[in-house]
Length: 230
Image (cartoon, rainbow, N blue to C red; front, side, top):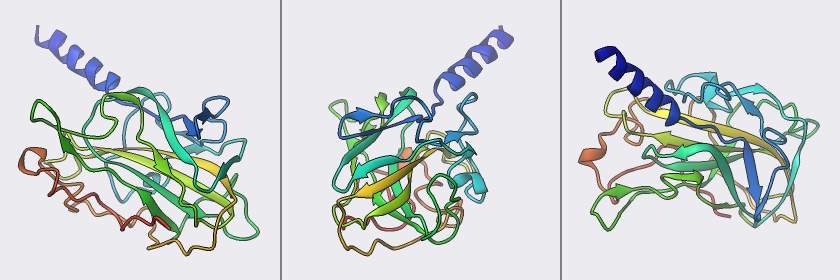
């Protein structure tokens, strides 16, 4: 009986994990999984990252994508998930501009180059339970590419931080995807603050080491820098 229970728990855990293989721009999805979105190491296992010092925290890439997707500044974006995103926690979007002379199809995104463009916080639902935007959906929350984003090639990074086990250090699970994009019709803004992955987070950050039973919508603090909205 104990063996059967263990199997059921393991099966449920696998079903609760997910990847984000397609970016949607203004309602139009990538043509295929991992077309401009870099295939992640967990494409089969669907497991999240639990070490915030791992190089995998940047893009979790197993291979670069074949394409670069054109995204107009001001566009509304989101990702499609392979499974229902049922774990509680924030969704955050970051961008990093590809250096001159390099390509989004090969650049690794290293250094203090990432700026945050979107984050989410929880709310209380009709049942007086804390819930998160897009929780239990098969898509992540919408974000907007700031209109002031300068033209050029970028890596677009999304993360969903699952906090159901985050009361223990190293318990948070981070699910990531990076897409190779080219921003057009942009502005002359100066994105920032800029951070590095790994490096932007500590395992003791209150947005990563947290007991969800002891915080509320107004007291939860997402990890990372302030959002740049242009």
